[in-house]
Structures are given as C-alpha cells and as structure tokens.
Amino acid sequence: MSEKARILVVDDDEGLRKSLGLIIKRKSYRVETAATGQEALEKALGKEINLALVDLKLPDMEGVNLIPTLKEMHPELAVIVITGCASIETAIQALNKGASAYITKPLNMDELCAKVEEALERQRLLAENKRLDLELKKELEERKRAEKALVESEEHYSALVENLTDAVFLFKGGVITWCNDRVEKIYGYPKNELLGKQAAFFYPKDVRPYEFTRILSSALKERGLFNGTNKFQRKDGSVVDIEYTLSQIHGKVPIEIMAAARDVTERKRVESERERLLNALDEKTKELEQIVNVTSHDLRSPLVNIQGFTRELDTSFRQVYEIFDSKAVPSAVKKKLAPLLDEDIPHALQYILASSSKMNSLLSGLLRLSRLGRAAPNIKKLDMNKLMAEVVASLEFQIKESDATVEVEELPPCYGDGTQINQVFSNLLDNALKYLDPNRPRIIRISGKAGEGRVTYCVEDNGIGIADKDRERIFEIFCRLDPDVGIGEGLGLTIVRKILDRHGGKVWVESEPGKGSRFFVSLPTKEGINDKK
Image (cartoon, rainbow, N blue to C red; front, side, top):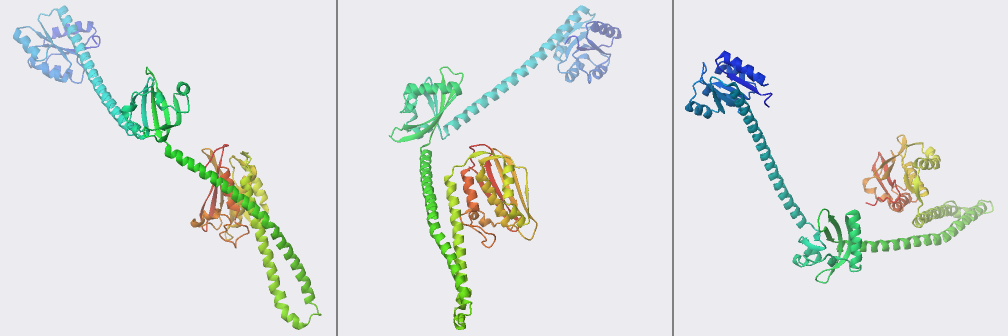
C-alpha cells in the first residue's frame, strides 16, 4: 500500500510544500499539494487520498476545521497535523477532530517520514481489521443461516419420517437404536419394546439367521442395498406380509443400517386373487376355444349335407321344371303349379343355399379365431416395409376394383409373428377398402412412428367414418355396423385385437363420420415389451 498511497500536503508555505512533495515522492508516494483549505477540498474531491499533512494555520480556515470535512470525504483518511505553535490543548483539539498524530515546525524530515509510515501502516491495519471483521460477521451470519437451515431440515426430515406410511428403523451394530411411530401399526409392537432388539428378531423364519446375515452383508457390500419380502407374526398373533429395503449409512462405525418396511398383505392378497382369476379365465378361455372348435367341426358335417342335398334338389327341380314346361302337361295343371315352380320353390332353394353359405363362412371364421388362441406366435424382428408391400400386393385386385390409391410411408421395424401381423394389416386395409366414400377420391395412407420402445402404425382412410358410440363395438365378435356395405362375417377387427393382445400390443381407432378413420396399431420395438396399460 505504501508505494501507491496518495498524500495530500496542505500548507500555505510554498517552500515547505515543495520540500515535502519532493521528499514524499522519493519514498514512492503520490503527492497532491494545496495552499488553502478550499484548494485542499477541491484536490480531495473525486480522488483517493490515503493521508493528509495539514498545517493548523491556513489563510482561509483553521486546519482543525478542515480535518472533519476531509474525513467525511475519505472516512479511512489518516491525518498528521503540522504546527509551529504546539501546545497540549492544540494537540488534543486536533486529535479530537480526527487527526492521528501531529509534528511541530521546524520539521525533522526523518521524524516526519517515520510518522507518515506509522500512520499509513495504522491505516492499513485498521482497513485489514475492518475487512476481517466484515468477513467474520458474514461468516457468522452464513453459519447461523446454515445452522438454522440444518435445524429446519432435520425438523422436516423428522416430520417426514414420522409421517411416512412405511416403518423406518435405524440399526447400529445389529441393534435397533431408533424407529418411527409407524412400526406399531405395521409390526404390532410398541416402540419401546422394539428399541434394543437384535436385527434377527425381524429375520424370515424359514432362513437360518447366520445364512440370512451372510446374504444381507454380501448384498450391502456389493450394492449398498438389500430388498426382500417375508412374513412376520405380530404381537397379537396375526401374520402380515412385509416388504423391506435395507441400506447402509456409509462412514459410520459401528455400521449403521437404515431399514424401511411396509405392510403389503393387502397387495399380496389382491395379487393372489388376480392370479387366481387369470388362471380361471385362462381355463375358461381354453374351454370356450375347445367348444368353438368342436362345435364348428360338428356343425360343418350336417351343413355340408344341407348344402349337398339342396344342390341335388335344385338339380332335380330343374329337371321337373323341364317336364312341367313340356306340352305333355295339361294347361290347367300348369296354371295351378306355376306359382310354386316359378317363384316359391326357386326362392326357397336360393335362401337355403345363401344361408348355408353364410353359416359356412361364420364357422370358418370361428375356426380361425379359435386357432389363434392355440398357435404360439413366432416372435422375431419384422421388416415392416417388406411386410406391408406383401399386404398391398395381396389386395391389389380389391384396390383396383375400388379405384383407390394406397400410399405407404417408410415404416420402422417392430417385433412380432410375421404371419399374424400380416393378417392384422390385411384386415385393416381390407376394411378401409370396404368403407371408402364413393363421392371423393379414395385415398388410404399407411405410416409409422417409433418412440419409447414401441412403434405406432396408422392406417388412415377418407371413408365414411365411425360414430363415437361404435368405436369399441366394432371390435366385438360378429359386429358389422352396416351389413349392406361389403361382405364379411364381422370377425376381422376381433381377430386384429386378439392377435395384438397376444403380442402385447394395442389397437384403437380415431374417426369422424363423413371424414374418415385412423386405425392405430402399437407394437414393441424389442422382444418382451408389453403395452398392457
């Protein structure tokens, strides 16, 4: 600081000012000089002044009166008074006004330099003390804030732990040293009875304690965590299922372990009931598939007989009609039998053939549906661009007949059974072709987008659309919203949903009557991913 300090010399003696200025500059200080108090104030304005040498007798004011004003402008300013008429009263007055020292004329330059160095050092020490004091205050304030935050954090943590739905324990050296209130609800023991108990008190009863301790220690050492479930007999004799997590608190000697446990008895009961219902449903589904399969086969035999004999009747009828139409038959007989032979019998035979054909079609559909449940899908990665090209090619005749345009974008791959996924998109495209609007250009777009382990494909048409109330109904078996449009058994979308269910996929529709429909199909991009949400 002494090399860069700026010193203001205030004295009306020009020779003394110059002498002091030269001596001070030789000491590497910066110098400002003033002959009057007013000039000194002007020189001090806007400049950093570290020390002032002030003569008590100035032309325009007393030096002791200049000191307070300079100190207001520069609070850290050190002041040395120069006087030619020193007295104790003068010294006391100067010191009271803020001077740190005084020196008498004639000046002893060595003494002056020593006092200047001493005053500047004192000023430096005072500034350093002030800085340290401020830092100390700041540190104390930060520490108080940190301590307050720590107390609040501990209070919040304590409140959080106490209000958790889980029971929380702290084990030190294998002994319970703390637990929250929830333990009484879950374990059925008062807290005071659990504190001090060995950890083995909670071990599964079907595992030897030393073996469980070995497994637990190994898991904590490798992963820092141990998860498990076991049954626990409460104090009242009832048994609960407990799911727990143990974690080691590092840096503690002896070893401390935090344990969190929850009662999952109800969840286990629900899971068990769900498993039972799923098994029962699976059995019923298999029974139903078997019934459908057997029934379809059993009905097909008499149906074939009906169709065969109906055709024979039709052939026989044509022969009878040829005889009837000959001249050998009297006109009176012809007139009487004409309504039967011209209308009733042909119409009846046609109805029998049409109905049996429809029945045959329905039975074939039921057989296809039942076989889906029995055939295990051959899951592999599918090139959907190649598969979709095959689907479009297989329906090329229907596309030309419908005068439709099918646009297929670049499709991302997915995982599935190639044959069954081909059937899914064949059914969707066939449906789109059936229900196109004849009053506008017929366009079908097929696109796909991958994301989050799944691919969502979209078959979009600008056909007649589907009402909101029918969006789920269309997936029901034998459902046809408009039987007069197209042909089919109403099984296509049922088969689509069943195939996708077996693939862990989904199908849904967005539609607006009169504008068209968008059928979405979600399939996994990796083997084993399920979309049952």
